[in-house]
Length: 446
Ligand code: FCB
Image 1 (cartoon, rainbow, N blue to C red):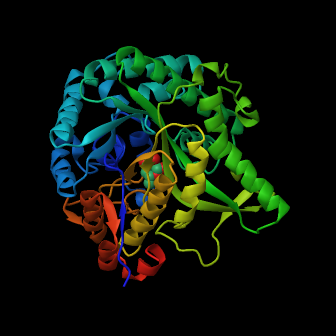
Image 2: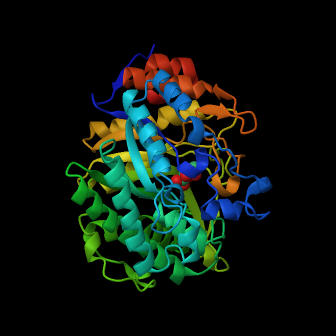
Image 3: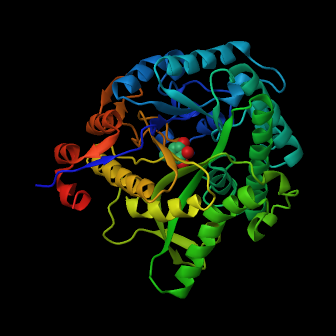
């Protein structure tokens, strides 16, 4: 009988991740709230509404995190609450965040604070969101200054911006899934992407000026890009192109201080300020993306997304479960010799039939990565609880905890118990696998 234990390093971070707009409720002063009011923007015309009611009571879920044995949580602060009007800061909102951060720390949970997670205050949106460098970058830096001045005693692990590539491409280039819903405008999308990276660099400086021990990184969404037809030159070309624009150009900008060809389309100012602005790198990893060449898909850069026949799929149309993609991406990131956090990883799986094996298989890859000396310091599962999943509304269930947005009733899924066992043991054991995903036993513990 197989019997083994895969231990994680002593100070490994076991956490979950959320974003303000998806969990707090009534964030009615940002562009997403406004976007939700137009029928057709969100699946089933869902609205974020009360979300998970964290603005009133995040603490009840923090207690549940303690029950799961977690020692870390990544959350975001909502710019439109803290600065409801340009230049006007809301001390009561800041106080609420302070209470949350204290609440996490008192429970032995280290907060990682994201400073921008897809939402802009309406007043910024009216000034073009991230389209203009001289507007968005200094305004973001001023907001970050306020945050570090008022919350810096409670947090020193900062994630500047969540997924600038997703924000720029889904908002300006691909399918108009995110506000402002511009389609096929590569040049504007690239300008936005560059401005967000410049915003990251400005935030990095501000955080370090105000806090010596600040540890500052970014959450970068990377997909494992793959040509559908192995060896097909055009599929290969398109996959390489998508890898460059979605995954690599951002890393090059942040580490080398240079804009690659496509980013230059946005006519950004120099990238020099970006160089060396990472103390760690965050990887948001969900899936493999298979592409087939399609001359009629300029919005997706001539690559149509397709699913590999026979692939294991989550509840999301293109959500292939592909833990094998994690290792090559980690190896690529490890070249930068910075600590790596998995800032998001998870899947929509309402009936929780895939999540236990998803968890074990991804964590098994992480364990191997750590064995080969890749510097992975923590794992933040997306998400702790079902929440408002942007354009997919409430249909996509990413939570370890199930939650009904109408009744607010929570219920742990089976995988919450599995994650609890892993976090408490700081290990994956064959017993756990036997209990939660017996069919994987041989594959994981050969
Ligand atoms: C990521 C987002 C996060 C959540 C997950 C499912 O791209 O950062 O807010 O929506 O996807």
